[in-house]
Amino acid sequence: MKILMTCCVCKVSGAGKGWRYFRDDEQIFWICSKICRMAYEKVVIYGAC
Image 1: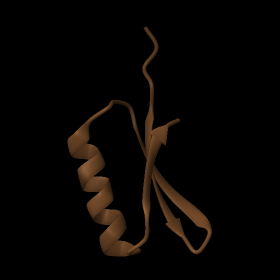
Image 2 (image 1 turned 180 degrees about the horizontal axis):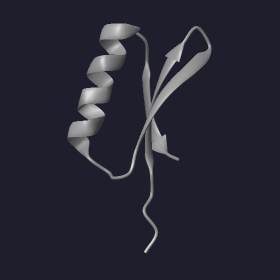
Image 3 (image 1 turned 120 degrees about the horizontal axis):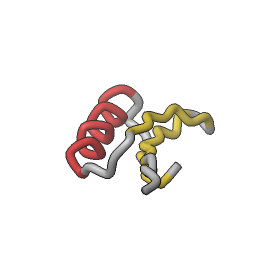
C-alpha cells in the first residue's frame, strides 16, 4: 500500500514554501496553516504531493 504525502504550501510573493507530511492529518494541516499565517500572512494551499 502506497503512502501518500500531503503538502501545505505558503504562497509568498509568487514563490511557495512548503511542508510535506507522510500522512493525512487535519491537525497537521491546522498547525501548518497557523505557522504559515503567522510567518507570512499569505494564502495557504493544501494538496496531495
